[in-house]
Structure formats: structure tokens, C-alpha cells
Length: 230
Image (tube, rainbow, N blue to C red; front, top):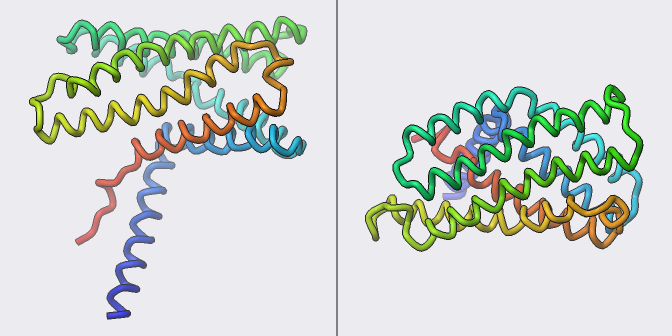
């Protein structure tokens, strides 16, 4: 019996390892795992004031900007697909507003990256305004998600009530609303001036919310149907 239990534990650990490897081999797996550490560092920087956490936060923030290079191509395709294939007008409008906001955000974020490496020379005041302008597009990305998923949580996204698809859609809506409930205050946080953002208490709560949102994203994208064995 003990050998069987140990065998199941080893099998579960191996499955977790393979699934984690599969996830981290994707763009979203790398981005969201980096975001988890990034916001954890922001939280710890606010709590402890340790310069190591501040340096890690800065390094990961710049690194994640490089992951966004070329993302506009995918999001433009997604916008076209939603426009042509989505029949529900409310879902179409809110989703295109979400995707379109991220589409613009990537372009502005590239300018922020250019400023970070010294290619775009801005004084601290203008650099702060550029960062806040970029995060405005994060806010306009989050709001349509809240509207769409609030509706889906009530209706099941048009699926037959009580069906497996209906329950699954409502579960997805709940998770997206939980993530958005964390992202919304974070996006508002980044719209504030640098002096306010750098207050330890504000960094701590924003970091904590970002950690929760990152965990939800990783949970939603976890390849639980991959790497299964008999």
C-alpha cells in the first residue's frame, strides 16, 4: 500500500513538473510567472525597503517589456477574428475594446522601453507622464473585461443553462472578474504620480494585488489536460 501511495505521489510530482515545463515554454507562461515575481518584489520592496527587491522589480519590469515585442500582430488578428466571428454584439464590442486597448498599450510600452535603455531621452517628469499614459490603456483594457464577464457570470455566456459549458463559462467569468478586481486598482495605482506610487504602503498593496492576479492567470492557463498518463 505504501509503495502504491509513493508511486502516485511520484507520478503527481512528475506530471506537475511536465505541465509546468509545458506552460513556461509558452509566452503567457513566461510573462505571468515573471509578473508574479515582479509584483511580489514590489510588495516586498514596500514592506522591507530592501534595495534588492527594488532592483529585481526594475529588472523584471524591463524584461517583460521585451516580451511584448510583436504582440500587436497577434492582437490585430484576434481583433479581426472577433469582429467577423462573434455574433453577440455586446461581447464583440467589449472584447474588441479590451484587445484594442492592449494593442495600443504595446506601442506606447515600446516607447517606455526606448526610454529605459536611453534611446528616447526624456527628463524624469516627461518619463513619468509617458509611463502613466501607457497605463491608461491598461485601465481601458480592464473595464470592458469587467463588463463582459459580469454579464457572463449571470447568463453563462449564452450557453444552455445547467449544461457543462454553462458552468464552465461561469467559472471562467468568476476567475476573470477576480483577476480584474485586482488589476483595476493596480491600473489606477500606476496612473498616479511617481511620488505617490513610491510610498511603501502603496507599493505593498499594489504588489499583493498583482501577485493574486498573476496566480489567477497561471491557474487559468495551467495545462491540466496535458502530460496526462494512464
